[in-house]
Length: 180
Figure 1 (cartoon, helix red, strand yellow):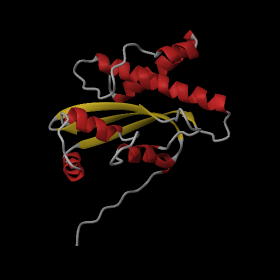
Figure 2: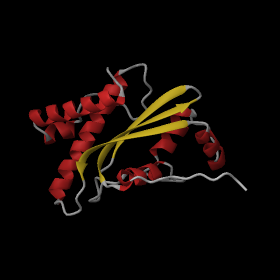
Figure 3: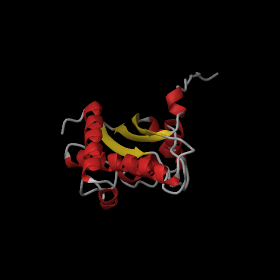
């Protein structure tokens, strides 16, 4: 008989909200970061952490499996490997997720309210990517961003709103242990 293990699913793992998260991947003594958020552009939803993590490890073609995609592209330097070999390499890795709730999710919110919350989560995500990419000692797997806030967020939020989002993002960076 094989060893068994238990996973206790905590309530906040299955609580839908607009989250920002940082994934730390350690492989062959190298550390990689991936920054993401929940809140869908096309649907009135914001996934709970457990569902988002599950999407990251979907095999085959998926628009949600960023961890698999970036692990293969960057960490494994585009090696052509099968699903079983990939699984073995992932088992040799250490992966840690840290989530921060930006806004609560309410399925009864108007489309406008959903958009506002999603845009805020995306703005925090973008800011975190920008700040972490500035540090040349860190390897950030996300696509490169060139400014603290994207053009769409600069158009959507006024200066006071952007400042508040920047303050929230800086608190997350500090809690994450980044003192950039």
